[in-house]
Structure formats: structure tokens, C-alpha cells
Length: 201
Image (cartoon, rainbow, N blue to C red; front, side, top):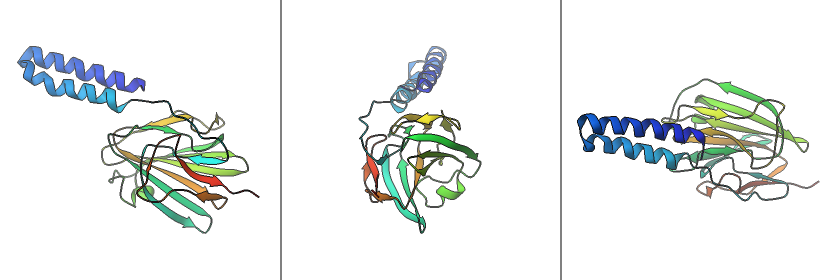
């Protein structure tokens, strides 16, 4: 479990206990329910990481879009609902070249324009002669993105690198050297689902 979940659960549990003591048990029940949900939401299960020249999903969720951003750049967008695991993982191994935070709007994360307009964190990973970028995108409910890494850090494929709180979206930007393996509507899991395979040669 992500430690944040324990803090939220303790806070809501304490508030529920206070409400039950002051106003009666019925008033504490909703807060106790929220505390339990926080424990569920911030779960962080281990995943089996595939081997080889692959790019894995950075997040649990549904593939919302596979779009050509340019002649040699493809964006794969993964939409997370509040019931998905929200721990983000590195899509590829390499060195973190850049981490850039951009302020923006809080549109519903499943909308196409969320990729460009919403508040987000961009993480560029350089490795194996190419660059892969990950956008952690805030949504209508999710208003905080967390990144554990900084420029210069080394990451492995599927390594935990951050967190988006309470419903959100993650975009992966891949160059022409990648053969895309997913399509819109597919369910993916962070760290274990292959989004693309590196072309040989």
C-alpha cells in the first residue's frame, strides 16, 4: 500500500470516531466507509514485468486512444477510474532525462483535449537509443500528480515512479521505432501489459 492511503484512512477514521462520539454512530459510518475506501484505493500490488524490448503500460485502466501525434510519434492514452490501481510505473528502462510540471485545467480525463490542456507532469526517459515520454494527467476529480523521480535517475521497466490521486489519465508517447500492440477499449495493467514492442534493426 502507498503510505498516503494510511494517512487518509487514519484521518477519516479519526473524523468518523469523533462524529460518532458527538452525534451518534450513524454520523460516523460514512466517514468510516471513506477510510476503508482509501485503504482500497491506495493499494499497490506487485506485478510480473515482461522481458525484452517492450514498453509496458504505466497505469491500470482502459486504453482510451491510440493517436498519431506526428509522422513519427504515437500517443497511447490510458484512462483510470477511481477503482483502478493508481500507482504509475516506468514504461521503459533508462535514464530520466526530464521531469516537467505544467499547470492547466481539470477537464474530465477521458476527454481528448485533456492531453494538452489539463494539469500534468511530463517524464522523459532516455534509453536504448530512443526516448519515451510519460504524461501523468490530472482529471476532474484527481487534482494531484506525484512523481518519485528526478532528472538523472535510472529506472527499470515497470518500476514504480509515481502516483495520480483519484481518477486520472496517463499518456505514453512512442517514436516510429515502436510497433503498437494495443487498441482503444483494451484493459491494461501497469507494469505487466505490453503497449508496444521495439522493432529490430
